Image 1 (cartoon, rainbow, N blue to C red):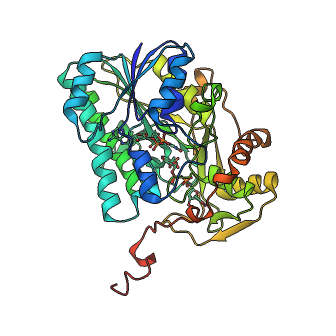
Image 2: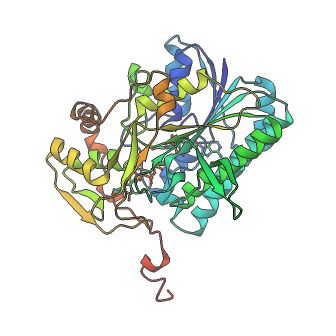
Image 3: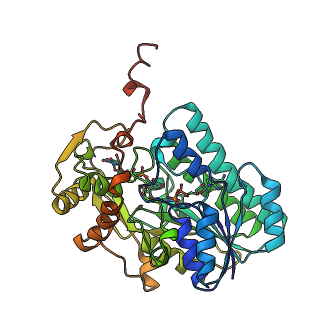
Length: 397
Ligand code: NAD
Ligand code: USQ
């Protein structure tokens, strides 16, 4: 298959591009390198020393697998280049990772809020418009998030995207509907993923686009089978207060003797998946496209759910580092339960990697190896969710 990987220089996109290329697909990576620029803006960098996109692609192409191509396009700003690329390549599949994906970054202030909405919503919409304008029947696989469902769990198992409801009217007649699960995003970033969902619903219904939306949990780990093939292929590893996700942050903190920064008491329960499984699930989704005319296929992409406290205790057990309870900068429930179905991928034979000490050790090895690159100054989470929390604002400064 000819596959475009939008956002193919990122944490999930890069190993996915390699996996699909290794399987023999023709891959073009589209990326505007905005993630690397945001690192400069934040004064942060990946713990692992990632090479430039040109260098990592050249290293892959030397290995003799299907070669990768690069298209440096901003999909949100440059519709015409995106359209021209799609017209030239007429891909069978487009995997779309190209969004600003950090919840804390999206809550830093007005500039970052507006950028996140402009970038994510425009990018997704540009892609949909171009597919329709060119009459392309490419399968669009989008990376969405479990966070669109919200975290007010009371024991209901979150279904895969749609909720089957029965409504009774005053006369006693009943009506059955399958509706999009109501969204309850917890950040501007998560809100953009909720908006993406509505765009997908419209274009699938109106134009028959074939779309799979993967509602993915928090990704942990760093390397995959392909990124291990050569040092120049190493994947990125974020641990700063904006882009670092909780388990990877705790692992870096633990190895470096930094108290584990649990927000509040850590009762927040979230969905988790290892990066190797991210790549595997996307490969499964790419191999099994929906039919034209199908509704948007929504698949939950998670291995298991765990509380932040659980995760911290696991890491403290492996590294011997203390747990700190820091003030929660976010506006989120201090405690929630979370059950979510992952039936679709399980029914395709997927056996998820679960959080076990052995696997944590594999990640801690990477962290140990690049210990000298650890910068404690980038660890604190600086984005505050509410104006009330922001010192100075209430005083009118
Ligand atoms: P990332 O920031 O590492 O990668 C995103 C890539 O997209 C970057 O290389 C960036 O330069 C590029 N990009 C952003 N805007 C672009 C634009 N307008 N035009 C072209 N390129 C653009 O993020 P990631 O962790 O790899 O996440 C990829 C996707 O998966 C995101 O959409 C994210 O919402 C989703 N996701 C990630 C996680 C996670 O834990 N990392 C969990 C669930 C879902
Ligand atoms: N948390 C801590 N301490 C920290 C960092 C985070 O306690 O040092 C807590 C947060 O308060 C939150 C939970 O851990 O309750 C998860 O935070 P996170 O930063 O790991 O994850 P999140 O902000 O939800 O975002 C990440 C990715 C995003 C993806 C999402 C999947 O950055 O792209 O969409 O995970 S999900 O959470 O399922 O929506």
